[in-house]
Image 1 (tube, helix red, strand yellow):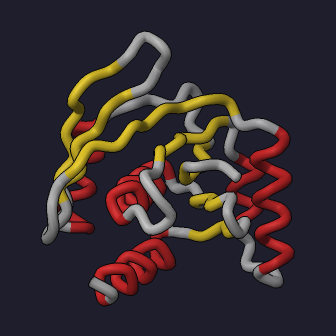
Image 2 (cartoon, rainbow, N blue to C red):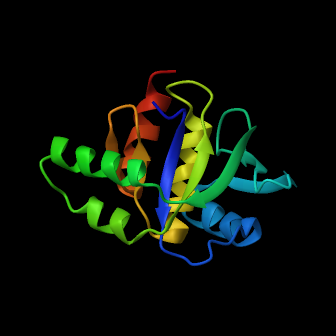
Length: 148
């Protein structure tokens, strides 16, 4: 089970542009993003500031899509009785990996939602597995915030 959300992207090469992503995050999700640092291995630390609640840091990285990623996406599509998200996953040549800190990590889900809205790819939660888009991510965030 992957302790992360994976966001499929067809952008070649995938490009980290936190300044542009921050504009998208502010405009559509009332969220702020800031790049705190990058490591030589391609990992970036991103500060995620939600509209309410405490901000925090999450690790974001990108890697080529693996056969196992696509297999999980296809399994998720079968579990959901269709939906078509797997078609977007198949187009993706890479995945953005958003590290999670626990099962209900709202900041990781929020960051994955912003990334998905920019790269126009689905989000894979390997725990299910579950494959979903921005609309479902937003609904899940709202549900998690109600529980607090």
